[in-house]
Every structure is written in C-alpha cells, then in structure tokens.
Amino acid sequence: MDYDSFHRAVLGAAAGQAAPRWAFGVLGEIARGRRTVAAMRHPLGFMCIPVDRTGDQGVCVHVWSDSLPSARPTTSTVHAHSWDLISHVLYGSVRNELIDVTDAPVDPAYRVFEVHSGGDVDELRETPRLVRCEIGAAELNRQGDTYTLPAGVFHATAVQGEAATVALGSGRPGTMDLSLGGIDTRTHRVGRQRCDRDETASAARVVTERLASIRTLDQEDRWDP
Picture 1 (cartoon, helix red, strand yellow):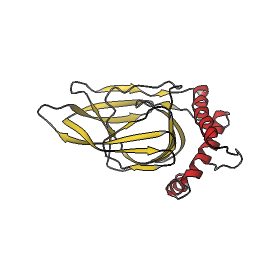
Picture 2: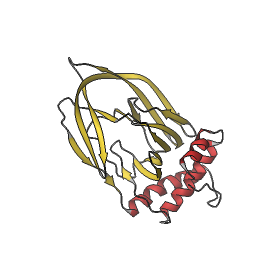
Picture 3: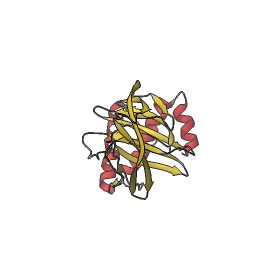
Picture 4: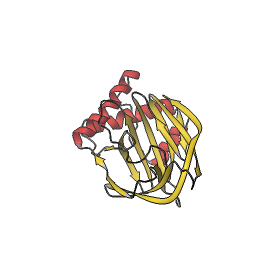
C-alpha cells in the first residue's frame, strides 16, 4: 500500500479496523524475516519501524514498550517536526502537549536547536534564539483515535505503559526539525541507534502479539503495504 492509499484509509471511517489489520500483516512479515527493514531506537524513547518511504513521504510504526531498549535525548523532549504528521493509535494512550514558545533573551529557559540529519548521524546545531515555554493545550489519544500535528508546532509526547501508532509523515518545504535544549548546550552530533534483524523482529512481535490479544485477526486477511 502506498502513502496516498494509506493516508485515505487512516482518515476514513473504517480506520479503526483497517489500520490494525494492516499493521498486523506487515509487522508479521517483519517478525518472520520475510520483509527486511531496520528499526531505530528514537531519542524520544520509542522504537521506530520504517515501513515505506517515497521521497519526502513515509509510513512508520512507533512502539513504546518497557520490554524494548530505548535511547535518550541529548536535549529536551520538546520539539517541532519539519513534516506534517498523521498518527493512528493502534493500542495504548498517547498524550500530546502543545507547547507555546516565546522568545526570552532575558532569563530564558531553553535554547532552540536545528536538527540536521544525514545518514546515521543527527547534528543538533545551536542557534542564538533563547526562549521560554509553557503548555498551551493537551490532548489524550486512545486506541482507535487518529490525530494530526502540523509541521512547525512545538510539542511533547508522553506515553505511560505500552502503546503503538502508525505514523504518516509528509515533508513540508521551508520548515526544519527543531528541538529545545539547555542554554549552555553546544552543537553536537548524535548517532542513530539502528537495530539488527533480531531486535527489529522482536519489536514487530511486541505489536503483533498485543494486536492479537485485542482481536483475533486472520493473517491472510490483511492489507499489503
């Protein structure tokens, strides 16, 4: 299934059935070694399993689980994407806090960093912009919910316990990945922590086993990406 087809499906009335069926099928293939991808330990604390990437559009499964090793950020968890996000919650709960960021050259709390990605390295470049921030709004998304986050919106995501989402990203020209970090933090590089085949398969099994416990699905009755 290509990005456009999945985009229509996730935003459709039947997303609550279609998205889990698709995820169960494609992640089952990854778990059995029939589809080769490499998951990544994202610095924001989840496992990212890439499924499809065409140009500046992509489909991934994000997994939060205490049974999987996780990476830690070198800045705060407050960030803004350079792409528009559409996310469907397969199970669990995902809380998004929308953050109001204001310039504060006097008594700032954070420095804004630009995130430049290349290969397996992310370079977080300090900028002269100093800011303060506060929570402007918060939304809790549960199993079966679909939510959106436009590019450029600062936010922080919090998950307690087990959760997984299907995330669709579409790059928006003219925007940049941003993160809030310490005032005295300097430009630095962070290597992406990619998983081997066994670790990726293990992450895929975490999701398929949870989906199977929610609803019995026939593996032959699935959507192919």
